[in-house]
Length: 185
Ligand SMILES: CC(C)(COP(=O)(O)OP(=O)(O)OC[C@H]1O[C@@H](n2cnc3c(N)ncnc32)[C@H](O)[C@@H]1OP(=O)(O)O)[C@@H](O)C(=O)NCCC(=O)NCCS
Image (cartoon, rainbow, N blue to C red; front, side, top):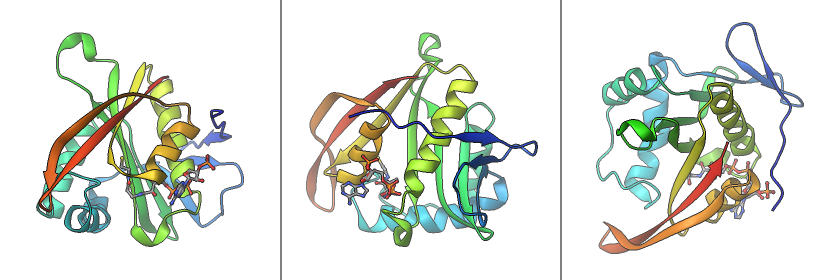
């Protein structure tokens, strides 16, 4: 599948405009104050799906601590529509050992009523561009299977499947496989 090119326009305030984006929408760096809305988005997937392997809802103050820790060194972006955060994407370090420092694991979640409208493509594109600007080299997406929309999203940006672990997770009384997709930035 061909990689998607987005016309991303960095703004003076640190936010990012995408050519053709609706004027009420904005992609910008996360702030600690977004924690509550991010928890609202994420906890639906924690409680109802195997997409994330977390088992218990995550409190907003825990999300705030994650934001503070991760956004110090890696990009974390939110997608806002008319002032409401409806999705977020971030990168975090793949492994702690020194030689892995330019490799990241990337993650994206949208509010469940916003799926399939092209928002994931805009937000993930902005995250990958932010990673390139910061000279990160390798992005890895771990996808609990099945997840057709996430596979399509990753492959549309040129990620290639490099691994699949069978029965590596257990949630809701079932074994879950996880595939890994890699992109050299
Ligand atoms: C995965 C996710 C971020 C994709 O964002 P999205 O806004 O729904 O997807 P988009 O509308 O931007 O479409 C992106 C690609 O996925 C494809 N796609 C979207 N929904 C799909 C579906 N239900 N089945 C198959 N493909 C789908 C689109 O056709 C598009 O592919 P293309 O560029 O080759 O045409 C979003 O669905 C989501 O948040 N899902 C729940 C959380 C999640 O799974 N996160 C990823 C964890 S690994």
